[in-house]
Length: 372
Ligand code: G6P
Image 1 (spheres, rainbow, N blue to C red):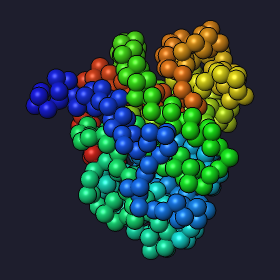
Image 2: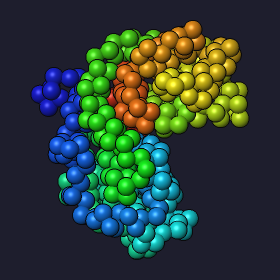
Image 3: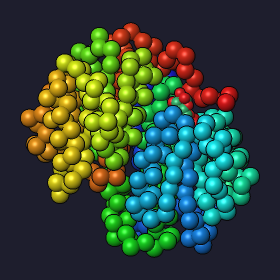
Image 4: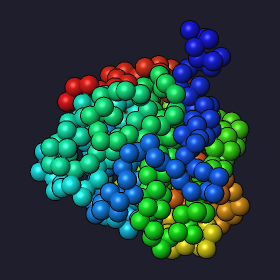
């Protein structure tokens, strides 16, 4: 009913709008007054965390993209090697697991069969499993050693939005907590990131208030067949998520690529007026990463692409190469997916609506896939 949708036409719109609150709720009570993380609820002791010598993340769909982003954060802040794998592939390749491996299973529903099977396999090998889950008392947390709940609230739309943002928050918390427990040399950075994280829900809110041009752009692309998405570093999984949203909702051919791979194939797809969304990292410090992606934008534009550039406020260097510019607030590099994903959700939702699709219940898809 309309009341259930909080006055929005679709659950997805409501859930997109709820993201600032979902992010804030997932942080609530987990950062203490001194700015340190309090995750006693994990029931894994600091001593046990110090023993961990490998992290393996398993998940499906959108949760898998959260896991891909988590890998960057975990390896950077903890220096523990981290792998991320599609749950449906995991146990079939005889993965190397032992009691010092921490397996993190990410699932909104807690009922995805492939992820559950990966959890069971990991525990049989003696590994500890930590679930990141949005559904209290669901099967995956019940079968795991520990759980960190995301507090997105019920997510009804099949395409995941607010659960994804809170999965990212939970992954950052786990990464920072691991770093904190192990006392890595990134101590100061970890404290600074915890501070930034506690501000981030406001930034998500700011993004949401500037989405009208994104909706307009989406409507203007309703008769396109293909949209490509490019990113590097954490912008790469964001590109994959942008493409997944468009497939799920708009039934369009959409693909995400690591921008560095352009020259190894995807650039052959570029033709006149093909929309290409590019996620640009922060220009601060003019990192190598930044310069490389700016040259990628130039390369595709020279070949006729219509460039849709997602760039930080104040980044003027990309302006000459952007046919459409979508601004996001400045954040630390690793946190950028929290703000960069939001315009892609809005974009896909609006394009689906413009194409006359059923936004909350896309064809052929289920909210939770309980078969293998
Ligand atoms: C289905 C949903 C996706 C979701 C995936 C994983 O495919 O349509 O939106 O990302 O399952 O679900 P989970 O509940 O495990 O996060």
